[in-house]
Image (cartoon, rainbow, N blue to C red):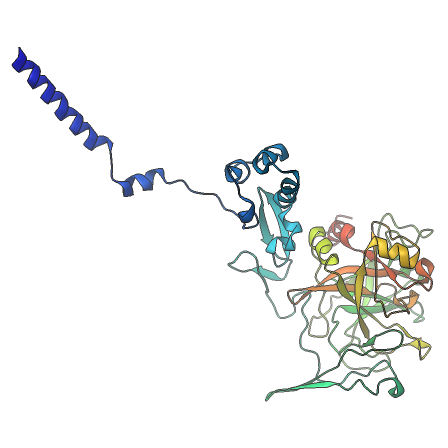
Amino acid sequence: MAHHGFALVLGLLGYLLLAECSVFINQQKASSVLHRYRRYNTGYLEELLQGNLERECIEEVCNFEEAREVFEDDAQTVVFWKTYIDVCSTNNGDCGQICRNEGRGRVVCSCVDGYNLLEDQKTCEPSGPFSCGTITLPEPITPRLSLDQSHINDTKSHQVKSSIAQVVLPRRIPTQEWGQFNSWKGQVPWQVYMFSFDREGFCEGVLISDKWVLTAAHCMEHEPTTVVAGEYDTKTFEHTEQPRQIARVFQHPSYNETSKYENNLALLELRPPFILNKYITPICIGNSMLTKYLLKQGRGSVSGWWELDYLKKVSTTLQRADIEYVNQVNCLQKNETQSSPNTFCAGHPTFVKKVYEVNSGAPVATERNSTWFLTGIATCGAECTGDKPYNIFTSVTNYIEWIHSVIRGEQ
């Protein structure tokens, strides 16, 4: 009996050893089966990951209370939460152009028409030679300055030389009043101007595609018939100008002539389309989020054929000036007026002259990664600000969907 019991124990032991061989596998095989794949992290939350934050908010969707349980601190939770729900608000989500929040601290980057997204899934590259917002090297000429010689004794140009070509770059000109200077030919290739049959009602606009122009709605009071692109000096024919007829006009549906500086935008469809080149290139229009981000960058540029104070007449050469975006508090203090949600203040501490009626429709542009985006339109002149230091412009932020819907033929 004892012999049979001993044999039974040996049999059970052998069975268990055999079972272990069939159940347990080596570490490499086990890892290939049981490996836990961590989900993508954009990098914005790396410094904030504590405790079970990754499990709660990265791999799963968390609410504010769950995030608060992780940080156990209100201030840290608020900082994390702003980034978690709106990554695009921080440096545009590191996207070169369009940023879209995907939740869980993630974003998807994309590009405007005419650009390709590179392999890094962030950077945008022009797909053609005249993609929107690009500036081909301007002509190597010395710009004719906006000041007479008595004012520019110290404004000599810097010369940049190479073995291939010589380009004369103007130094920023400090002036007593305006600070403006002539642009280079080809420096603002999206700038256009318009006129009527009797060449009255001079207004400006900005080219946003090969056949669409955005301008101020009140410019339509002059019944313009023709738009000219590729213009630099209005008194000289330079063989770069292209005139086009206005085929259709779309004023913003909420524009009211009795309140000229609300919704003061109009789209013009031209026929035939412009032939794009280094003198005629449209400006880019981002989405609302990108445009808001660009306005927060603090600086942009405005261009146009405005009045030169010392000459008491409108310049014949295209002008360009840097401007600073001004917050509502400073605008209220200096201008004694407050811009509306659809407008913004801009100017420069040394500027005392403003973009008045003669510049209606002129574009305000902001650069990002060597690409220029439209941020505003000059629509509000002396009637809004008088002799105050800042101009008020219409922001395109809240009108982008309307612009696209008109171009798509939905209105």
